[in-house]
Image 1 (cartoon, rainbow, N blue to C red):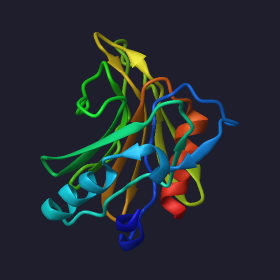
Image 2: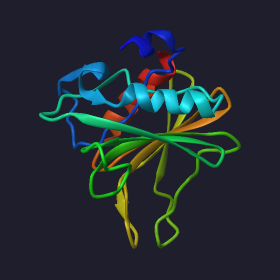
Image 3: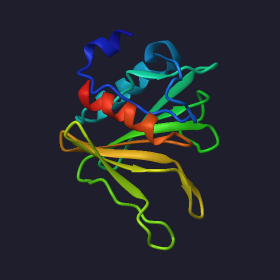
Length: 172
């Protein structure tokens, strides 16, 4: 993809799948449709660094990107269909970038902290497993990068998968 070579990439994104560590990955440009349009939308509307995938888990069908500006940042939805636009029933996950935000320690209904702090290569990650609490909240990992809080969320993703993807974003 031409646009990918022109960007100063942080290089990441998450994808939902209960993927195992050995799962084959493929270049994003070969499986994520609408990415150029999503990136162009964000470039026209924000000055935040654009966090995009460097790879995605192999899948039998394509992924579709849909970007939108939200208060203090943006979100890139990664969906199963081109018309999903982040709806829960067809969302495979998302990456979100926010300014004026900090990673959070989440708690369950009983007040027990369910977020784990993982320090790796000088970065502090905040991982929360997927959980139900009135609604289902997907697994997520958060960290600070260039004064921007980055969140990668994916239903059913393991800690190992999200950490692997997040680590690649930080070191890209």
